[in-house]
Length: 475
Ligand SMILES: Cc1cc2nc3c(=O)[nH]c(=O)nc-3n(C[C@H](O)[C@H](O)[C@H](O)COP(=O)(O)OP(=O)(O)OC[C@H]3O[C@@H](n4cnc5c(N)ncnc54)[C@H](O)[C@@H]3O)c2cc1C
Image 1: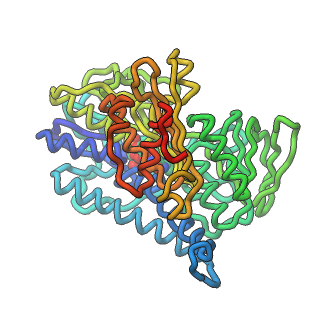
Image 2 (image 1 turned 45 degrees about the vertical axis):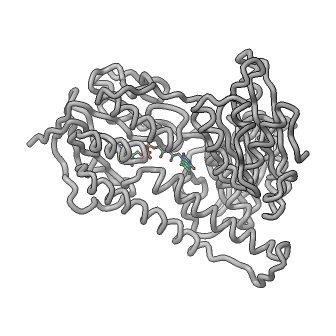
Image 3 (image 1 turned 60 degrees about the horizontal axis):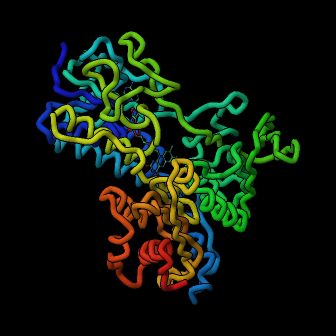
C-alpha cells in the first residue's frame, strides 16, 4: 500500500537527514529512506570517524613530545584495536543521535534500497548485502511510497581507477583504512586530496612509512599553491615521502605486500609497501535509482541541478555529493536546507560554492575559503595579499605550535575579501571567521576595526588582514 508524503528524501547522510529535519520543521510530512547507516558516509565512514582516529594520533604525538612541555611520559604506546574501537564508538553515538533527531522531528525512516518508479513514486526493497546497521526501531519497510517532492541525497562512493582496484585486503579504500586491524609498517597513499592526506597524516603519526603519490604538480590540489607547498615541507619533515607529477601504473600483489610501479618525472621506480590506500576521489551514487527511466540529466557521475537542488524533472531534486562538488558534508547540509526552503517558497539564494570552506584535519591542519591567489589573478582581480606567520602570535608560541600561516587575499580596488588560506594548529576552527566575513561581504576596513581577543590564534586573522595593507604589528 502506498503511503503519501510531502517530501521523501533518499539517503540519510548529512545532506539527507538535515534536509528531512528542515522539511519537517517547515511543516512538510517527511520520510527519509536509508539502506545502510543513518548519518551516511560522513558520520559512519568519513568526517567523524577520521577525526576520532586523528585525535588519537594527535594525543599520541603530544605524548611523544611531552618533554617539550616539561612533562614526562614513559613507555608511550598504543593499541590500534582500541583506537579503532573508539572511532567506531564515536560513529555509533552520532548514528544513534541521528535516529533520535529524526524521531523527535517526526520524520519517518524507511529502511531499504530506493528506486524511482515515476515522478512522485519510490519503491523500497530490501537492500543488497552492503555492510550496514540494522534498521532503527520503528522504521518502515519495503513497499511503494508516494511524495509530492522527492530529494535524492544518495551520496558518493570511492572512485576506482583501472589497475588500482581495491581488494579490501592489500589495496584499501577509506572503508578499510578506517578500521585497520593493525598499523601497517609501510603504506602507499594514492591521491593527495583531503581524504588521502588525512590518512597519510594519521598513519605516519602512528609510525608507518608513508609515501603519497599525486599525479598533479601540487599536493592538496584545490588549495592555494603557497599553502600546499608549506604543507608538503611539513609532511616531508615528518618523514612522509611526497611524489607529485607521479602516476601509479601498476600494482603487483604479493601475499602480504604490494609492489607499485610509479611513473615519476625522473623516470620509473618501484616501491614495495604493506598496504595501498586508493584515495583518488569519489563518484556519485547515481546508478540503479531509475534516473534514466525518468530522463534525469546527469553529467560525469553526478546529477545536474540548478543551485536550488532542482533537477530537470519537476518534483525531483538532488543535493549533497550526488549533486556534485565540493563533496563536503556542510555543502550537502546547506544545499538540502536551501532546497526545502525553496520548495516552501521562502526567499532563498542559490548555493554559492565560492563561500564554502574546505578543511583538512592533518597535522598541520589546512583550511580555506574563497579564491586562491592563482584563481583571483585568473579572474582578473588586482589583488593585495596579506600574510601572517604563527611565529608572530603569542598563543601559538605558548601552545608550542609556532609553525603556520594565515594568508588573505583582497581586491585592491574595492577592499573586498576574496579568499583566505590557512595552515597551522586549529585553523579548521579559525576559518569560520573568514567564512562569516565573506558572507557579510566584509571589507578590509571592517576586518581591521574588529577586535580580536588576546591571546588567541584568531589574532593571526587580524594580523594577516593588517599585513595586506602594510599595517601588521607583530612581524
Ligand atoms: C574518509 C572521508 C573523510 C571525510 N571527511 C570530511 C570532512 O572532514 N568534512 C567534510 O565536510 N566532508 C568530509 N567527507 C565527505 C563527506 O563524508 C561527504 O561530503 C558527505 O557524507 C556527503 O553527504 P551526503 O548526504 O551527500 O551523502 P552520504 O553521506 O554519502 O550519504 C548518502 C546515504 O545515502 C544512502 N543511499 C545511497 N543510495 C541509496 C538508495 N538507493 N536507497 C537508500 N539509501 C541510499 C547511503 O547508504 C548513505 O547513507 C569525508 C569523506 C570521507 C570518505
